[in-house]
Length: 309
Image (cartoon, rainbow, N blue to C red; front, side, top):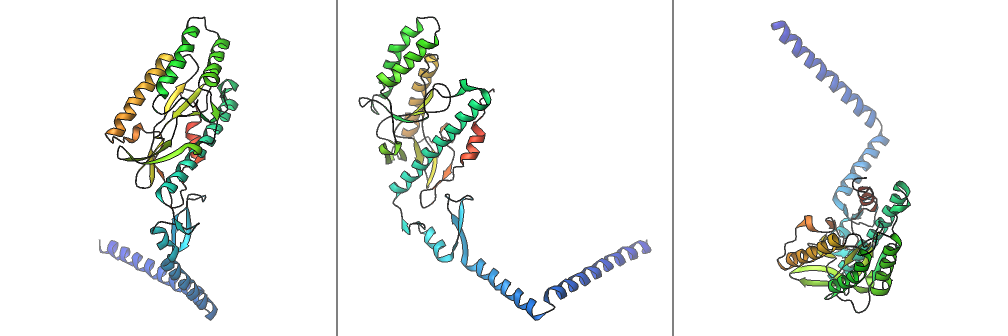
């Protein structure tokens, strides 16, 4: 037993001795000349200066979402400054930039998904309409949009329903709904954007009038209103959209759902029930210049494959 303990401690001593010799040899290699010593001193000073005076701040316009700044700019950023413009943006301008970038990125994502599905699943998956944002007839507003769309849809749906399934008839009905009834015109959505700082106690961004967002898929779209985005602590935490299938093949489903979604949206806003699972968007951070950390490539990869396909 004594021999075992002796051998164990002797082995430990040898290891420590060898380690000490290696460290001594390493130091000799690193500091065996005056030049090397000066270089290491300079390196140490640089490291200390970096730790003391260099910081990172969010900048979502950059590839990695941040930029390196000196301590002075770091303090300015924490005061709310947009460093690129050397000024503090007012909240309305900040939120307008954020929602503008979101709408633009969402448009790019939907176009990428549409092209990918057409290439991988076949041309029948490609949107029949040009993907984009469209305004509706001037008579359609935030108060009557649901009733107007319902009536226009029903006027065209009843004769379609009473005929044998005919794709041409349904396509003509769709064209008449969009271009003759709703009178859609492609637009820049920022023309109608508005920030509301007290929407039932919530800060929201939306439009002065209903906007139709034609998305990927055959006959798919979303109706965007005055609550496209909900902001909380300078983050885009949610928003509401209403799916609108205008193919004249799902009337019972989509009209039922759009009524349900509208009532749920109204209830949640009035009661401030901002349940994240019921919102349209992920939690998106906003930097001081209004840039957002919304990764187009990542969102595209997650959404490009059709459910069940």
